Amino acid sequence: MADIETTIGQVDPETGLKPMVINLGPQHPATHGVLRVRVALDGEQIRACEPIIGYLHTGIEKNCEDLTFNQAITLTDRMDYLSPITNNFGYVLGVEKLLGVEVPKRCQYIRVMFAELSRIASHLVWLGTAAMDMGAMSPFFYTMQQREQILDMIEMSAGTRMNPSYFRVGGLLNDLPPGFEEKLRAFLDGFPHWLQEYYALLDRNPIWIERLKGTAPITAEKALDYGWTGPLLRACGVPRDLRQTNPYSSYEEFDFDVITETDGDVYARYHVRMREMQESLKIVRQAIDNLPEGDWHVPGWKIYPPNKQEIGRNMEALIYHFKLFTEGIRVPAGEVYSAVEGPKGEIGYFIVSDGSGKPYRVRVRGPSFYNIAALPVLVQDKMLADVVAAIGSIDIVLGEVDR
Amino acid sequence: MKEILDALQESFGDRVTVSEPLGQTVVQLPAAEIVSVVTFLKSQGFNMLIDVTAVDRLGREPRFDVVYHLYHLDEKAWLRLKVQVGGDEPTVPSIAHVYASANWAERECYDMFGIRFRGHPDLRRILMPDDWKGNPLRKDYPLTGLDPLPPLVRE
Image (cartoon, rainbow over all chains, first blue to last red):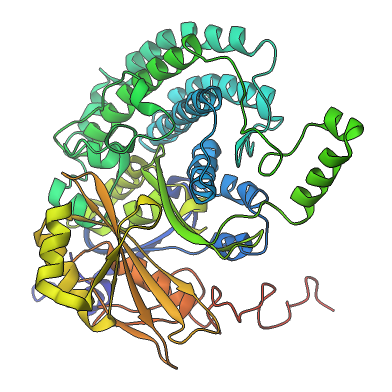
């Protein structure tokens, strides 16, 4: 992998010409947000490449230090905005670990269900936009329809579509609303058909296959070296999926396969994500079929606030409610690392508490940050158009890269 | 996992201290040892560097904790390394030549905390603009920024 600054100055001895420098982005649809990629070109071949990030930096880690533990959940929504629920997931699990509590089974199952639904939603956006990058316009319209159904279900439960903050420390915002199960089952029954439609649109399309096979490959060693996680790493043949290797929230009770491919190119990543959607569907079905009855938040009022009716009747409930919403939950001092398998890879939270109602430090390990860092390896000495395919296949969300 | 930690303890003696708060393995070590410890751990199968970050413990000397998270694929376990640094120019040896993922992570740590990584191939700001003053995640950096915000409209 060549260094861009030295490459720019190198003169070709035959032609006497220097490489041409081109900026892709920061404002371009193919960069999936505000990413700038500086490339040094020899004709159409890439001699060196440097991704430049930071255009969407909003200081989320800094802002978390000024909010109570529950308020900070709203900021985690805004990082990977295509799958906010998995972001909430890692954070609340971390805080619960510091508190030393475990949420009831029903809550764990509902969390798994929503995490998998948002994984499907995220992969659908990826499929639509990645195909659009390659010039296939129609898949986008198909995938958006199905994603809309998932967003409707999230809206039913959380009240908002994009930034739900549905998971709370010690529980959920609400139990499943009436009518949710019917809507979910309708989605589960309908989605396999739509998945076949996506395959029909792309899988035997010669342009799609030609364009993706062998494009932007990486070896498993390199991928591990760059800290790649999630579908990208599994496309290199490494079966690392935190849902199975380090199960959390009762994932060990679900039956699903970890999807791997061996080629490590864009085509392998496409197949891993497509088959992962089927596995997620399996998990959601098991979760709704075996959904336990009972509480959906931890008992007592010290962590999860009392409900509104109780506050009207009970003085003690009112006091707890007031304390929780002014001072926040008292989290014992300590440090914890909590990670979940997000649609893009390992979403890790390193949370430090000093015993007050606000986190002392929240570090977010966004998978996209590490994934995009390997872009120069993927496109070294390839054609310029492969950069677009590579960025599309990495499935970056700049909100998470820059935080 | 236990064999690796025992081997680590054997090679580095009392320079490293292993503890297990909340069931997570933490290794505390001096800054000068970080490259040799990380190289040793990589040879023992910790093939992923998951994250590098820091915590500003303002009021304590040394002031910063630099925190590394490693992952072992076969043991399926994380390991946290903690290094304390302080002084006017906190400096830690870089491990970017051991793990490629350390490159950007250390740059972010430098950008946000002003911690220098000696031997890093390209230590520049990564998220903030190049001419930015101060290090935003330090505890003495105000939430509203050091300079007053520029006016939103021209006079």
